[in-house]
Amino acid sequence: MNQTEAFYQRIDEALHNDQLRRNFRSAMTGIMARRAEQFPDDTQLQALRDQARAVRANSLVRQPELLEQLEARLTENGIQVHWAETSAQANAIILRILQAADARSVVKGKSMVSEETGLNHYLEQHAIEVIESDLGEYIIQLAEEPPSHIVAPAIHKNRREVADLFHRFHPDIPYTEDIDELTQTARQILRDKFANADAGISGVNFAVAETGTLCLVENEGNGRLSTTAPRVHIAITGIEKVVEKLSDVPPLLEILTKSATGQPITTYFNMISRPRQ
Image (cartoon, rainbow, N blue to C red; front, side, top):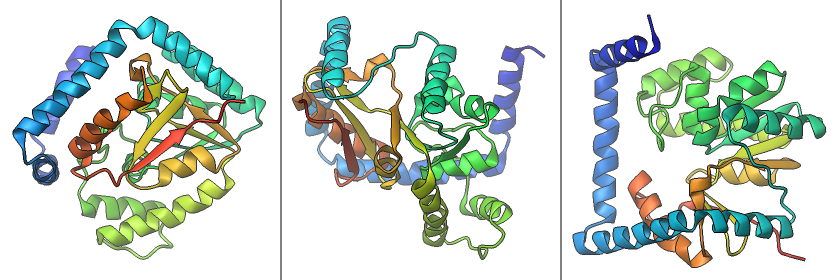
């Protein structure tokens, strides 16, 4: 069976999985309702979309010069910049950084780029432990599955399936299907990983050329621990994340957080930057 045939077979199997369809429907209904609550005025929503579209269009047109400016500002801020054209190059660069730091364990989160490059599997092949710090990503890591949604990677799992996973991998912790208790269980497990990890790896939501600032949006607090607690932090991003000015970020931040989670901007916003000397 070739790759295309295998892909269509997986689609057919998923579409005929009644439990999977119920899981998605339940989760998406809740997300769509919360998002609608955050954007009650269609006129204001369209204005915000237009503003965000203008920021992105400017970034795209001026991308080459903005990337050069971003590199210069990041370097001034004490951040070392590496460029990669392929997944293999990106993974090899990260491995070299970790090996140079004698890092044997990594906490990682909020990075779809690393999913595309297959970073976890690559590092594990080189005897480096990788633990996903985001709850959804940790769940699918235990399940040995790829993310099913860019914002909610474990959206296809219901609470019983998550409870079964936790009980299988952490049998010493009492079985529960209560969402709050499952979340607290994950936090207890991950706190030890944060405290002892040699390095942290994160994604980037916006890279500001004007200031050399890397912005990371999260809703759990784990991303902040991944970027600050370990002695080494690696941020991996695609070039499309660059924006010209720090003032470009607020409209993008507002539409991102409210659209992604149905939450107002009380979501954690981690700005990774060092003051210029």
